[in-house]
Image 1 (cartoon, one colour):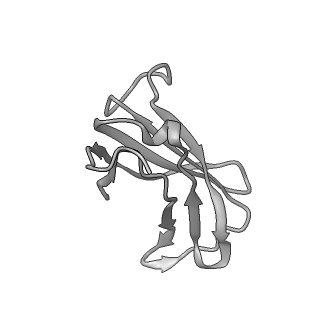
Image 2 (cartoon, one colour):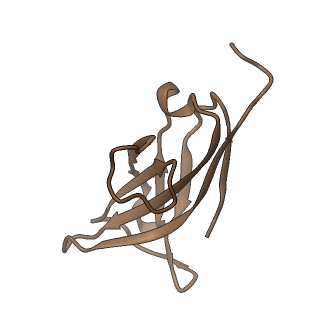
Length: 110
Protein backbone atom coordinates (compact mmCIF):
# COMPACT_ATOMS: atom_id res chain seq x y z
CA UNK A 1 0.00 0.00 0.00
CA UNK A 2 1.12 3.51 -0.76
CA UNK A 3 -0.02 6.76 0.84
CA UNK A 4 -0.33 9.50 -1.78
CA UNK A 5 0.52 13.03 -0.70
CA UNK A 6 0.02 15.96 -3.05
CA UNK A 7 0.20 19.70 -2.64
CA UNK A 8 -3.05 21.61 -3.07
CA UNK A 9 -3.31 22.91 -6.65
CA UNK A 10 -0.66 20.62 -8.19
CA UNK A 11 -1.89 19.20 -11.50
CA UNK A 12 1.02 16.99 -12.57
CA UNK A 13 -0.13 13.47 -13.52
CA UNK A 14 0.08 10.48 -11.21
CA UNK A 15 1.82 7.34 -12.52
CA UNK A 16 1.48 3.77 -11.30
CA UNK A 17 3.38 0.70 -12.44
CA UNK A 18 1.11 -2.32 -12.16
CA UNK A 19 3.00 -5.42 -11.07
CA UNK A 20 2.28 -9.06 -10.35
CA UNK A 21 4.77 -10.81 -8.05
CA UNK A 22 7.13 -7.86 -8.45
CA UNK A 23 7.15 -8.02 -12.27
CA UNK A 24 5.47 -5.34 -14.44
CA UNK A 25 2.18 -6.65 -15.84
CA UNK A 26 1.11 -6.31 -19.48
CA UNK A 27 -2.00 -4.11 -19.10
CA UNK A 28 -2.75 -3.73 -22.82
CA UNK A 29 -6.42 -4.79 -22.57
CA UNK A 30 -7.12 -3.26 -19.16
CA UNK A 31 -8.96 -0.18 -17.94
CA UNK A 32 -8.19 1.69 -14.71
CA UNK A 33 -10.06 3.94 -12.30
CA UNK A 34 -8.71 5.87 -9.31
CA UNK A 35 -11.33 7.14 -6.85
CA UNK A 36 -10.83 9.44 -3.84
CA UNK A 37 -13.33 9.67 -1.00
CA UNK A 38 -13.46 11.25 2.49
CA UNK A 39 -14.36 7.86 4.00
CA UNK A 40 -12.10 4.81 4.15
CA UNK A 41 -14.92 2.39 3.37
CA UNK A 42 -17.87 4.30 1.87
CA UNK A 43 -21.09 2.39 1.24
CA UNK A 44 -21.76 4.29 -2.00
CA UNK A 45 -20.22 6.87 -4.34
CA UNK A 46 -22.27 9.86 -3.14
CA UNK A 47 -19.36 11.60 -1.37
CA UNK A 48 -16.57 10.70 -3.79
CA UNK A 49 -14.22 13.65 -4.08
CA UNK A 50 -13.37 12.61 -7.64
CA UNK A 51 -12.76 9.63 -9.88
CA UNK A 52 -10.14 9.54 -12.65
CA UNK A 53 -9.85 7.23 -15.65
CA UNK A 54 -6.40 5.86 -16.32
CA UNK A 55 -4.45 6.34 -19.54
CA UNK A 56 -2.28 3.41 -20.65
CA UNK A 57 1.05 5.17 -20.99
CA UNK A 58 3.24 2.10 -21.52
CA UNK A 59 0.98 -0.97 -21.42
CA UNK A 60 3.70 -3.58 -21.96
CA UNK A 61 5.58 -2.32 -18.90
CA UNK A 62 2.46 -1.85 -16.74
CA UNK A 63 2.57 1.96 -16.67
CA UNK A 64 -0.75 3.78 -16.25
CA UNK A 65 -1.20 7.53 -15.87
CA UNK A 66 -3.93 9.56 -14.20
CA UNK A 67 -4.30 13.17 -15.30
CA UNK A 68 -5.25 15.56 -12.49
CA UNK A 69 -7.16 18.72 -13.33
CA UNK A 70 -7.54 21.90 -11.32
CA UNK A 71 -10.92 20.82 -9.91
CA UNK A 72 -9.45 17.57 -8.56
CA UNK A 73 -6.34 19.32 -7.21
CA UNK A 74 -8.19 22.05 -5.32
CA UNK A 75 -8.67 20.23 -1.99
CA UNK A 76 -7.11 20.16 1.45
CA UNK A 77 -7.30 17.36 3.97
CA UNK A 78 -6.95 13.65 4.55
CA UNK A 79 -8.87 11.31 2.28
CA UNK A 80 -8.71 7.73 1.00
CA UNK A 81 -8.31 6.23 -2.46
CA UNK A 82 -8.48 2.98 -4.30
CA UNK A 83 -7.11 2.01 -7.69
CA UNK A 84 -9.09 -0.55 -9.67
CA UNK A 85 -8.16 -2.51 -12.77
CA UNK A 86 -10.75 -4.01 -15.11
CA UNK A 87 -9.20 -6.71 -17.30
CA UNK A 88 -10.23 -7.84 -20.80
CA UNK A 89 -12.62 -10.43 -19.35
CA UNK A 90 -14.36 -7.73 -17.27
CA UNK A 91 -12.94 -8.85 -13.93
CA UNK A 92 -12.38 -6.06 -11.43
CA UNK A 93 -9.33 -6.08 -9.18
CA UNK A 94 -8.52 -3.48 -6.54
CA UNK A 95 -4.78 -2.93 -7.01
CA UNK A 96 -4.25 -0.46 -4.14
CA UNK A 97 -6.21 1.13 -1.34
CA UNK A 98 -4.69 3.64 1.09
CA UNK A 99 -4.58 7.27 2.25
CA UNK A 100 -4.67 10.27 -0.08
CA UNK A 101 -3.58 13.55 1.53
CA UNK A 102 -3.75 17.07 0.14
CA UNK A 103 -1.48 19.48 2.00
CA UNK A 104 -1.21 23.26 1.74
CA UNK A 105 1.47 24.82 -0.43
CA UNK A 106 2.88 28.36 -0.37
CA UNK A 107 2.38 29.61 -3.94
CA UNK A 108 -1.28 30.43 -4.58
CA UNK A 109 -1.20 31.44 -8.26
CA UNK A 110 1.20 31.18 -11.19
